[in-house]
Image (cartoon, rainbow, N blue to C red; front, top):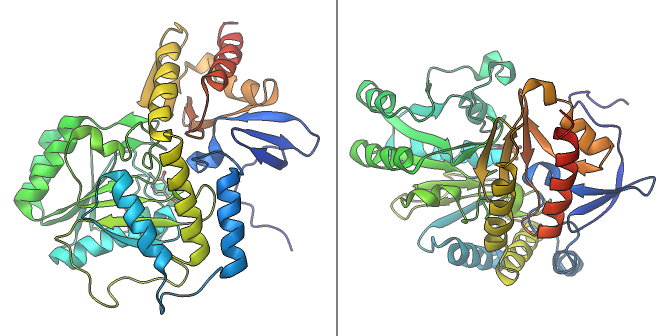
Amino acid sequence: MQLFDVYPINDITIEKAAGSNVWDDKGNQYLDLYGGHAVISIGHTHPHYVKRLTDQLQKVGFYSNSIKIPLQQELAAKLGKISGKEDYQLFLCNSGAEANENALKLASFHNGKKKIIAFKKSFHGRTSLAVAATDNPKIVAPVNETDNVVFLPWQDEAALEAAFKQYEVSSVIIEGIQGVGGIQVASASFLQKIRSLCDAHNAVFIADSVQCGYGRSGKFYSHDFAGVNADIYTMAKGMGNGFPIGGIIIAPHIQASYGLLGTTFGGNHLACAAALAVLEVIEQDNLVENAAKVGGYLIEQLKTFPQVKEVRGRGLMIGIELPEELNHVRKELLFKHRIFTGEAKPNVIRLLPSLALTMEHADQFLTAFKQEVGKN
Ligand SMILES: Cc1ncc(COP(=O)(O)O)c(C=O)c1O
């Protein structure tokens, strides 16, 4: 049997990983500033993570949500404490798309309305509602097309106000920092505007934190920079450091009832052990502060390169926009300097490393980057 060929891949096979490094099958070492797409939050094969997962696997790996799973409660308490949202409620699922799907659905259950406001260049996942709220017609199948989603220009307060006048809005979904959209940071005033309009119109503010959340921005949720709370935060990627787990946290005024949401795998023992290990390491090693420090340093240094068009982002979620003549740089970084980075079309290098990245790693990248862009 062949694989269904949907991924354009690099000709590299990774066999080993530790911290911010990975090694290929020929023994070559790489610096990982991509984190397998913002997933590796605490570093590859962190000893505490490996131990907690191994110990859990030897006890019980999986049982469904038909029995008590105290690890879920433990995870909710720890997540509430670290994120500063202790009065929220946690629902666990398995991926970012599923988290957004549940959030959009729950908003509609809650207020009985249908219209979703999303933004240009947004990415929210590939399940039916999540993809309908994603601004990329190429990945929306005819069956996913719906009139229930309205796309507004990014950060256009007047358009947002007009949409609230025109439609019965159920929810507004927004990434605190757009990832696929090229690392665009939502301003505090725009997020505050969403908050006040949602309050005035009984709509639900959904903070998609799948990529920008979990400490990556230098605050636990990047929307926190605006000083207002969303009603639902969605998360996945960094949550399990590679173990598939997603979740939504839900403000206290939104009520649960039996059967409203559900999943077979969500919140299983192994997934909770992975997520707990991640939060324990984030807390013990002050990784949110580290993301702010090392990310701040990288952003500051990158801004000194005259060849770079723009540097955007916060913490360890950084976009480096290059002019077209430098579109080879990302490949050179990978194949010559052995540094993994991400990209956003057309010409943005995306840095999404582990939150445990060190200053030495940052300097290693800056030296390689200087060699490549400096040539022009
Ligand atoms: C902001 C955002 N939301 C949702 C998703 C979908 O997550 P998943 O691929 O886990 O379904 C992604 C994935 O890249 C994302 O970046």
